[in-house]
Image 1 (cartoon, rainbow, N blue to C red):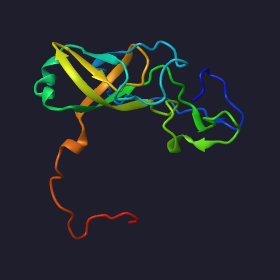
Image 2 (image 1 turned 60 degrees about the horizontal axis):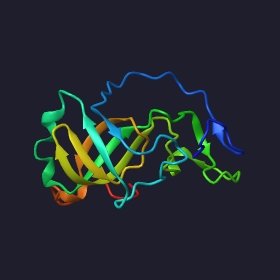
Image 3 (image 1 turned 120 degrees about the horizontal axis):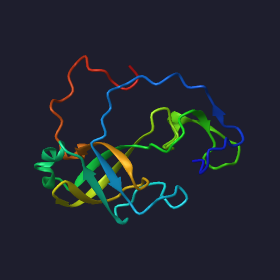
Length: 164
């Protein structure tokens, strides 16, 4: 990840097409101890610091029942990331990979995800561990960990398989 907005050796930027409105609504704000990319961890850790997720009205009633889940998936908008690099050099050594082969926050649609441990809910605020984003990051969505659910149906003849 580039800590500044420079383009490293071997990286490729494009002129991105104009954005179209997908109707995205931020439902809250994430509060973390990190205000600089230099300090922010590259991956969230379950033993990391306690962070707050603050929901906006009218979304607070959507938290009903969330305490039943230990692990949540948090989706957030990496609002301070550049969006124009299609090849990146994460090690800053001149070797590059395509944006879709990386977990870099620099992407066409900078959506971040973290699996977090839910520590508690206090009104419209959730306390969690496991985030890796800057303080003030906009919240897109919350979901119980998908591993907490049983698949709805077993595979059926004619289902797509790997390689189809």
